[in-house]
Length: 183
Length: 197
Image (cartoon, rainbow over all chains, first blue to last red; front, top):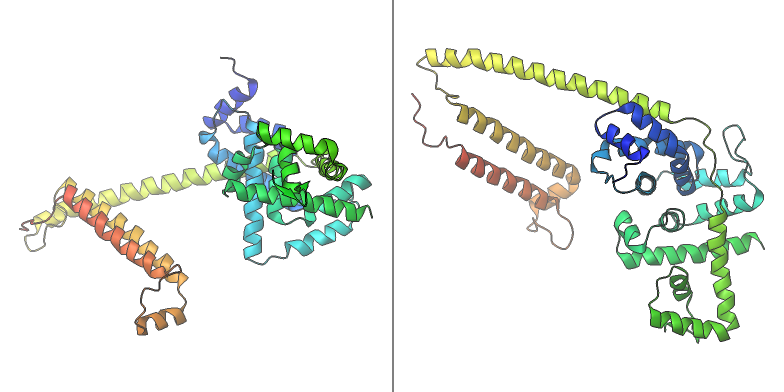
């Protein structure tokens, strides 16, 4: 059996080697941040949840199956974390929507105004953030993480047909929003 | 085939794009698509969403988050080490006190010998932990009941409302767990019928 460099690193992490985990965080932080940013629509929140996801992953690393790639596991964990974060925020009535609205109105969003996104992608982001949370998470897991319906259902802890329905509605709504944007 | 007004439904088109149709469904859908411009248009509309999502570029992260992640993990490790040492020292302290007290109890004839054997000490600790767990459950359940509901339920005949979640169920479960745990522990560590000197 061929052991990849990543597997060697993860084995070290399982034995408590924090420096090895640092290397893993560096490799995956950007992709995990993108997951969080697409779901949350807020850069600062996305960075916080990215860190939180890596802390959780470290504590759950003993359960990670070494025969599988680390990236999809890590990104799915982050997507779930963001989904639960949004659910908790809704329960506490934190005005996430208002916060995202202000970001959506800002054409070049970022702490120093450096996050430059072209017009077409800005419109797509705005449309994605207008979707209900659950539809946005379903789209993330299917289109960006490539999960099957069954894997999505297991990840979101929802019945398969419910997940499929959220995904279909999300795509329909996204198509409508993009058409609205384009007049 | 699931059709709306003689056309393929949007859901079925999405299932097609996801590769979620069986062979028969696939053939039927493709036959219809060949001759229906309206469905072709709808398919293109959904395909455009797929393409747009695929085209979304990854954004660059501006800070290296690994530094703060590792700092937090190191802090946690330190904390966990200090908690472990605190527990070890507490255990040593408690052990010393018990070790000194037991001979003292034995030396006095008027005090009952509460902790006579290793089995009894173990049973005592187990019972304490079980009671702690069940009392925590009761405390948690108590939080679920506001004062008004509690008062109402105490003065009404409907102590155990059905159809919706009742905190009383949790309290009963906690009491049940406590009784069951005590029964099991006492059975495996018998201190019943002990004849105190």
